[in-house]
Image (cartoon, rainbow, N blue to C red):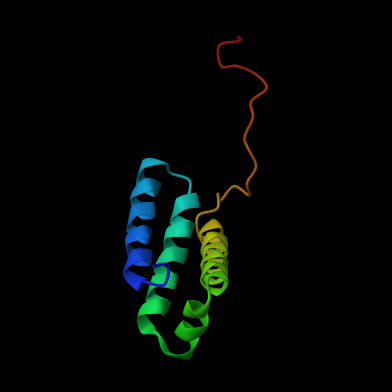
Amino acid sequence: MIWSWWIWLAGAVVLAIVEMLVPGYLFLGFALGAAATGLVLLAGGLFGGLVAGTLTGTLLFFAGASLVAWVVLRRLFAPSSGGSVRTFDRDINDD
């Protein structure tokens, strides 16, 4: 059942819906990893055979694809301020 491509794609849709409810780009990376796994299983061929050969291979591909997706999303949607938080030392009402 873990090697059924449609289960991975359905899981990707569920994770994308969860991402809309809980933002933060964490579940979106997992959704993209699940979608990539489902598409590789759907395409089959030599690479799909390596992924679908064992449970370990399938889960390793999913983990790797999710990690790559998370890194790409982190680079695309990183704060433009360099990641620093702006702090204020005085209040506007202190005069």
